[in-house]
Image (tube, rainbow, N blue to C red; front, side, top):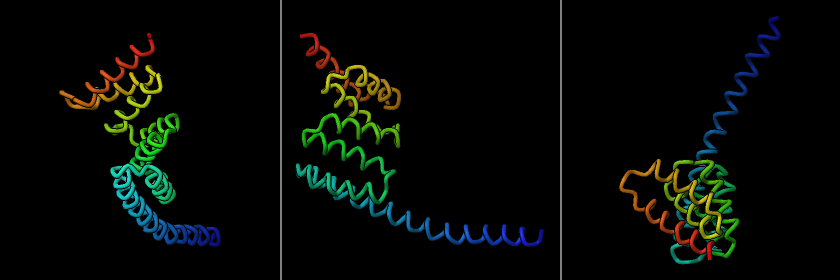
Length: 154
C-alpha cells in the first residue's frame, strides 16, 4: 500500500513538473504564431498572397488553434485562385472562433462567390445575430448574396 501511494505521489509530482515547461513553451509558440500572422497581414496588404500563405503555414505549425491564421490563409488561398480551399479554411477558423465578424463576412462572401447561397445566408444570419445594429458588414453581405442569387437565375 505504501509503495502504491508513493508511486502515485511521484507520478503526480512528475506530471506537474513536466506540465509547467510545456505551458511556457506553448505560450512561446502562441506568441510566435501571432507575430507571424502580423507579418502575413502585411504581405496580404502588399498583395503578396503566396508569401503570406507560406508565413501562415509556419504560424499554424506553431499554433494550430490560431483562428486568425486560418482566416488569413483563407484570404491568401482565395487570392491565389483556390476559392474552395479559401472557403474551407475560413470555415475552420470559424470553428475555432465562431463569433469572428470578419470571418463570418468572408465566409458569406466566398460562399456567395462560389454560388453556395445557402451557406452564405447561414453566415449572414450568424453575422446579423452577433453584429450590433446598424451592421454595415451584414448589409453589404446581404447585397452580395442577392447579386449572387440573381446571377444563378440567369
